[in-house]
Every structure is written in structure tokens, then in C-alpha cells.
Length: 135
Image 1: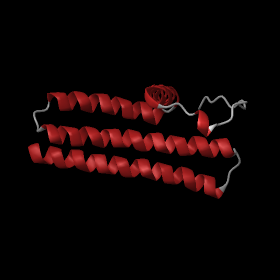
Image 2 (image 1 turned 60 degrees about the vertical axis):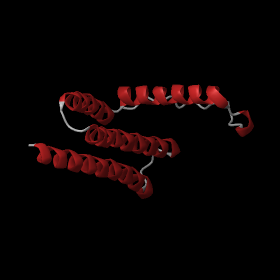
Image 3 (image 1 turned 135 degrees about the vertical axis):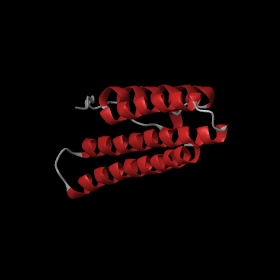
Image 4 (image 1 turned 180 degrees about the vertical axis):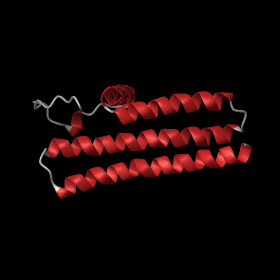
């Protein structure tokens, strides 16, 4: 179950008060790391994909193939993580809008899930093609 603080905030977005320069980059990095931490704690699919990333990174470090192929295979796993992040963002947004069951809410969540599925298929095809080439 997701743990989300749903207490209303008194803060309002002010586009003129946005940080600039290095501060913007540091704050963006902090927010990104916070989001990844939240995903790791609350999304089992994301945890599974992180484990997959670790395992494939070890395999790629030990596998003697060209660096470009390693980069493509690693990128394919990162693409799955990216799709999972976008899917979770869609789900959280839909849940924020309302908890009631609505066909469009279900469709939005299903489309996000389909995006993850397509990313997994792409990654699988790249890995399968590379494995067939060398084995």
C-alpha cells in the first residue's frame, strides 16, 4: 500500500520565485532522489526492476562484449525503470484526483501499465538478440 501524505499544503506555486543556476540543479537532484527513495520503499515492481538493474550491471561488467552493446543493454533496463516511474506518476495523479472508480481513471492506469509492458518487451528483445549473437 502506498504511503502518501495527503494533507493540504498552504504553499502555492510562484513561477517567478523558481531557483536558478546551480541551486536549481541541486534542488532538482534532491527531489529526484527523494522520488526514487519513495518508489523503492512503496512500489514492489520498482524494487524488482532495481534488482534487475543490479544483476544486469554485474553481468555486463563481466561479459566481454563491445562497450556500445553494453550501453544499449544497460539503457534498455533503465528504460524499463523510466517507464515504471511514469506509470507510477500516472497512478498517483489519478489517485490524487479521486478514489472513486471511473472508466477513464482505469484507462489511464492501464495505459501506463501498457507503457511498462512495451518497455519490457523492447528490453527483452535487445537482450535476446544480443544473447543469440554470442551464444
